Length: 513
Image 1 (cartoon, helix red, strand yellow):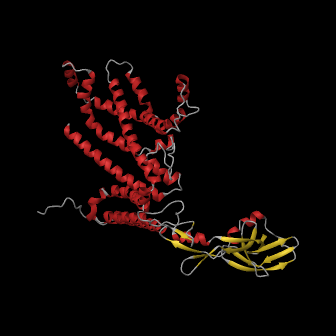
Image 2 (tube, rainbow, N blue to C red):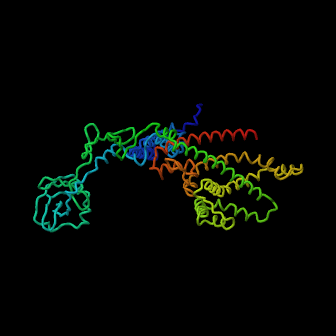
Image 3 (spheres, helix red, strand yellow):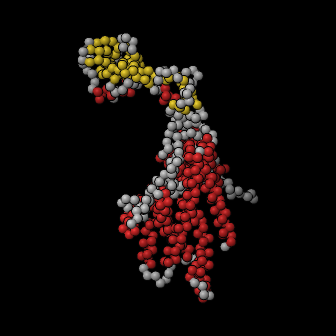
């Protein structure tokens, strides 16, 4: 009797359902391949490759019975590839480019923009009007005493060149200015030749003029500036056209610059010094936040476990309220409370002690403020966890310790804490990782300020690495996506090392228990 391989499902008999299933798989594969091709054509080849791999995986795994076992894990792998692996790889890729606000375009598009620049001769400017002529239009230059009238032209967006002749009076059916403006797309493509041979092109909503290109493309790929005769050469190392004098002409284009961003980070004092300072503060902020929230949450949980305390339910509700209120609302409330001029905290301090601390302009006070707010937001979570873990400590052990003459503090540190700390460790590590990248708190409360003087990129006293990178990429300093990508890669490596060290420490601590 033959043994049936349980990993290989029986062949599915052919039916209309099977045909519909295969058609759906094929259609979805074609849709994904079309999306991959579209993404590739708009200049995102890496994302296109990922979509192509997902489409092929879908086709083979769901189209052939031999790959049936992979159908259960494919959705998770595809989701991770699209939303985890691709963003990481794309961010790393940006770190090796000059991508930024001055280098957003492709080379072809940047060249097209520069070549589209025109020089308008104001001495040839002529106000114009448009008159319908059947299915076409005529363009009139002049006033009520006469001027020039062009031959009929379609104004359908097709480039055209028409001649104009002298007339003693304007056409009777000239369009209103509003109607003429609606034809601006077609007017932009028309060249009108006056009787003296002067070519006029549309130079605005109200006039035509002699328009000449500012640059022309040469056979060797360089650009010639018509007015001065200067030559622009494409420098693919920097992503700009460069003059003979070394001046760059925007816009630039995206290009690979190798390790230039990393070299800039490591060699530029204006970047390296604040980045090292911000890294140290990020670690201090994350560790201090974990320690403070853990200590306060655990202390409150122990107090609430006291069996003789009355109204414990009410106290628990009040202490959990900071966790129930949305975090961004609490942050904005604290931002008002810590206002240097009108905040209630400074008003109280001034009334009691005559003090008005500069919470937003003094770096040390700003860090104290941000740690205070983060502790307020984080302690309820630790308290809830501690209340659950404390229930698992055997009461008999504590009673035995009390009978031996141990006090409450000694019982806590010798019996209670060692038993709740091992299950707490993974959660403490998760809290550390969260606070290491808690840029929402920084951006809403201080926006990273006050700024560190002497830096060439935006960097603040309360900036952590996440907010520091966000400001470089999206807020300040010209949206330097490439530099932000390089810093992100360094942060990724640092966080990986810290996470590995934390897991090793946790494993050793767990082994000792």
